[in-house]
Image 1: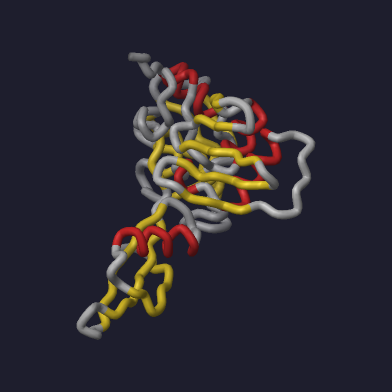
Image 2 (image 1 turned 90 degrees about the horizontal axis):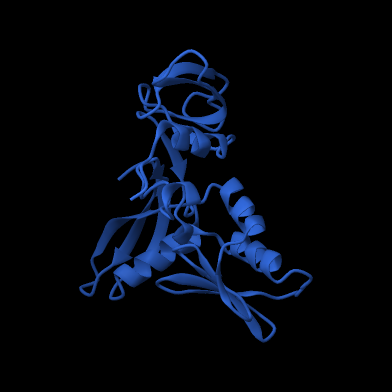
Length: 221
């Protein structure tokens, strides 16, 4: 088991400049713009701003314990169709197909183009037209910049979430449905990204006997 030292945590943070974090005291979200560890062994100074977070237009320059705050990530299972297509283009360099078809499976998302496909497995493996491999550097950089949680060599192959360094985004959707007796009801579906199609797919898989009438994103369940 890889020990997660202070140095490893700082390395992970430095790779996630520009990503969203959860503030350990305020409990709000902010964008991490930089860190400073020059004055403390146990604490780091977070430079950031709340734009896109809970306090727009305000800055965040706070000393916090390095063990107390979390990055906010998206699981790879929440990858959007658009990002999956971009991954396929990066892996099959030089291809420029006009039509891509997306197929979502329990353990991966498949991008079909022409007579080939790319399988993006949710554990970080990618199966191309000829072999199965771990995500390469170009794909890793692209997905990391988009906020997806990926296995890290600094964490012994664990994701940041598995290592306790990140939490996942949560988006809640309220689905209104009609049951078998014709009665209206509703249920809340939680997904790891702001994506209507993924929310619909999760509802339909979880409740195959129900037909939804309408849905909306809500603040929290």
